Every structure is written in structure tokens, then in C-alpha cells.
Length: 124
Length: 157
Image 1 (spheres, each protein chain N blue to C red):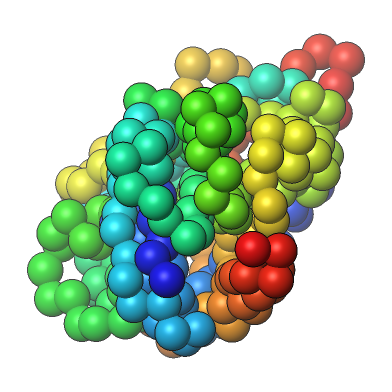
Image 2 (cartoon, helix red, strand yellow):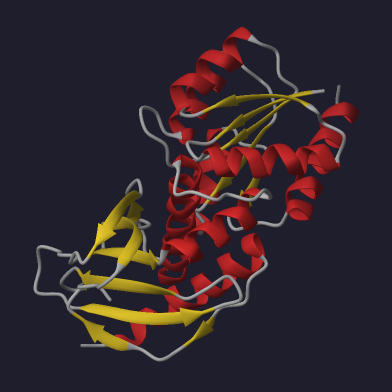
């Protein structure tokens, strides 16, 4: 199981990576903006992408739309401060599989990941 | 001026600090500020735009910034380095994000990218007639303040 962690904050990437360890995901890669994430997602077959929204160069939502347009079907969990219902709907319409609002506890993130990994495993 | 708009920001500080830092901040009053400061401070700030415009700032004396960054990163940080800058940036980002969600504007208020200022005796300025509201907090990780200036667009609240 390989995950791509995308956030312009090194601190958040570190927290997310630690939380992924709680569900046994140790193989992780990092990207600091949407453009890096898009490139990485097209080059490598990740099992999961955790994606921030507000980032320089290309936002998370722009990267997500571009990934889906490019045929990248990897499950994506938005991990973001954007907490409005309209934002959640926008992300789901763009192809996000789940949504986690910052601030979050490691257990909350682990729970989301378990749900996504479980459901993607069961649907092949 | 309606100062109740500060409440979502105070709730957001409590939420962010208890969830991400395991620190329960205690609010020590509320005052009007000119954005000035004395002593060495690390200030992380982020802009809000759209149906409201303004700035949210968190101001930390260095020992508090180091304590909070160490808690957030899960390892001790002993100097004001890039890790501390990044950690305090993310704190103000999360506070502003959580607060703006409570206003529930349609379309949602936009957040800028955070900036961190480090220095002694500087003043925050915002190009408007808005005033700064300052909320001092104390916590097990040290004292800090939040300052917010906020202008609703005409016809919005």
C-alpha cells in the first residue's frame, strides 16, 4: 500500500504520515503543491492520495480535476481547512472519495483511511 | 461595530489547539488593539477575502512558538527554524479556516496563504478603517494572542 501525501505544510505532511502509520501504511511519498501532486499521480500508481486544498502553484481541487481528467482513478481524501458544505460538495463533484476537515486527530484520519482502503479493496 | 464576529475565531483557536496540540487555551479578555507589539514575537497571519475581508494573526513569544511547534511535530524544536515557521503558519491557517466555515457564506470566503513575520516591536497594519480585536490566551505551552481585523462587504454580515 503506497500513499501520496500532498500539503504545502511540511508539518501537516509529517502528521499525516505518522497517522498513516497507525493503519500500517509506511510506504509514502510527499508533494508540496498541486502541480507536484499531479505529476506524481500520473507517474506512479498510488493506492491513496491525501490532498490539501489551498496550496501555491496549483490548488488541490485543480489538481484533483486534472487527475480525474487524465484518468487517474486513485482514491483521494481531501484533508483541508475548507470546511463549508459547498466546498465538500465541490470536492466530491470533482472526484474526491472522502473529506477530512482540519484540525483533525490522528485517529480521525486513520478512520477515514481505513474506510477508503477497505472500500477500494472490496470494489477491486 | 459588532464585536461578536470574534466568537467564531475564539472557538476556532480552542478547536485547533485542543485537537492538534493537546493544549487547552484559556482566554484572558478581549481588547481593541492598534496592531502594535513589544518584545520579540513570531506572528503568523493569513488574509480573508470575498464576502468578508480581513486578516487573522496569531502572535507568539519565541518560547511559546517552540513549545507549540514541538507538540505539533511530535519532536522537540529548540530554535526558531523553518519547522517552527511552518508549524505556526499551519496553526493560523487552521484557525482562519475553522472560523470562516462558521460564517457559512455562499460563495465561501477565500483564504490566502499564510505569512510569518519575526521581529521586535512591529505593528500590524491593514488598509482599511477596521480596528484590530486582540484576544490574549494563556496555555500550558505559554501565552499567545490572536488579533483579527474584519470588514463585511456592504450588504453582508
